[in-house]
Image (cartoon, rainbow, N blue to C red; front, side, top):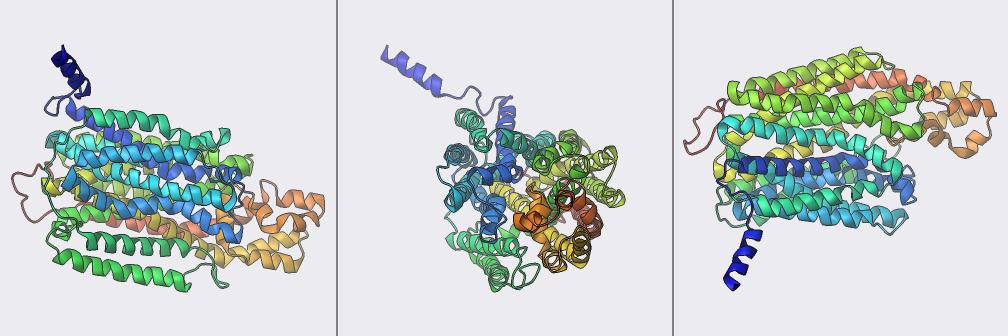
Length: 577
């Protein structure tokens, strides 16, 4: 009887599908896709919910002393994932990819519960959310770093592109799904954007611990502590410097002359150079630089970085375009624009979801490079289309253009990942997956610094005169109009991004109260600001999307790079690597 009871207990603990079962690969794909989806949804769900979050903790994010809270709430999750994914991918190679991945699901779920019960208000409430979002990002990094490696281990080469396509498109689409989901949940309760993770996380965690197996090649190794520390310090300093560079400083519209920003940029680069020297000398590096000797691996990661910068810039510019101009002109209150911006961007997500799995499956048969390069060419064409349409566009034209952009991203995502993962030895797949995720996540952080800086620079040339003239025409005294017009444009962009009425934020209640009611109503209405900013904003878009076109075309060329040497026969390859 005791033996029977023990047997039953073992059977209950035993996963239902063994690692060598023909269906195991689909179990691995479905669980890792859920992990990628929940991790990337959380990189954007907060973006669209920031007004509700700050209202919930009773903090005005646009007050000068609170801008740092806003930036870290906006960027902290993405910055941490960019820094940690390589280290956690390397740990997966050493200790087991499934072990690190499962721990990530557990950490992600626990921190979601803690985030949802934030007991504080004001700055304390913001610090609670920022700190626990950083901890949540550790769990998200574990999921991101090892999911592609687990899939590559589980699937044969002939199906790997399709499987990675499903996984990668889920990850990329998650950043756009988060916009819609965050807008819907924030309308109900700001805490619900964290609650929603809990049941999904519990299901995913239990499922992962019960069903996933270690099928990859593990190679015991020592931890490269100096490499890990120098990489984390260097990349954090660099990305934090870029993030703070978009803040005004010392009378300048941006903070690129701020000594702390310069220290972060220069010091970060210097530490990253030291990191490269360290990695070239240690016996077992956490970031195997020798992998970049493979031209296909280097080209694939370069394309990932450029594509991520272009796609991240597009996401932020489209949100500001919709929330600050198009939606108010079409009758939406500023407070409602975050939700509707997410809804109107659905064609972008549909394009990703439509193209990704198909491109992955077809690339298994016909080769990955052509699909990856074609995806970037389609993206470049969509950026050109966005330049051609007017600021107050016809929605069906806009929907078609952003759908094409999503289609291009879907065509690129899976084949590019397949190229990268097939170009490395089996024992390095965790590190390679982490490197790919690092370039992708770092690109999202870089996109904000690059594209916000370009947009602010474009607005700084033409917005002050346009704004000053418009304000004085509505009775605002010349001195006040001049002062408001010469405020850094980044405040105006953040107001539009957060769904606040920009003119109401710029003028304040006292100045608005001193004006005739009709003039105050006109200034804070749904048409004054959009008509005022349309011209300067389009001038900035020309610069922003022109750079995105160049990045996309360079990334297309990088995707076509082939390896000069033949990979060892024990490494599974796609037909095209």
